[in-house]
Image (tube, rainbow over all chains, first blue to last red; front, side, top):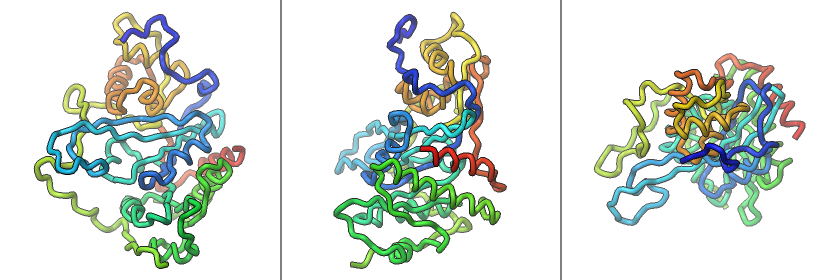
Length: 206
Length: 131
């Protein structure tokens, strides 16, 4: 691996470099089941092309890709896509699209503990895949909002029916969004921020 | 059509017990464990910002040289991991040594606190509105 005098070092394009004035970062986690649109949402609001951080684990048949009885120990790569939004000249926000399975979360230190909050992205065709994610966030005391990614052929439930099915506290926002659209994804993030702000005002943020 | 039904959970509840470690069904482990028992690794978050403090010394490893060239401007550990195609855990190990050698400095992220920083939340909201 000789990077010495080459322009081929992988790295940010000039326009993707952060200014020297940036001092700190915050993060928001977008969590949901496979194929629910996490990466789409990250990509629609990110100022950089979404990047991927990976962690490699040794484990046979860890569930997402069951090998149907194969007992060979295999290396499995868990990937997490993320994007970035510059907030001020001193502050930058990162968005992480995170696998719904909690057993992967430990791979990245403090993924949820340090986050401002989380967006649980759900698909009403497979509502039950979000049940465990929501429960884990509740157990960890991570503030979250629920965003329904509106797939054209997905069943549409009234918000109160969804709230009941997801057994969500009345104050937790539920919004519809189209993760492909920047304005819609931004509005979802704004909903989370307003919710966090209201928690801060009432001193309920833990 | 009736949707499936979830049961709410609470922070006071003990977390669900981990499945028993039987044979190959244990929890996954990181494939790369580089150096020592890992207990001496710097506490780096995905969004800890790394900035180079020095030019690569002659003794620098290729990974260190690549990292230093990348973070002449601030860059998160997650971005370093992505650009170098190295697992997050490997990058934190390399950075731990570089922090000890004062080749780079790290800016901790602003995290959610019990007493929330409202001005921080308002700054993020203002920034998002400009999108």
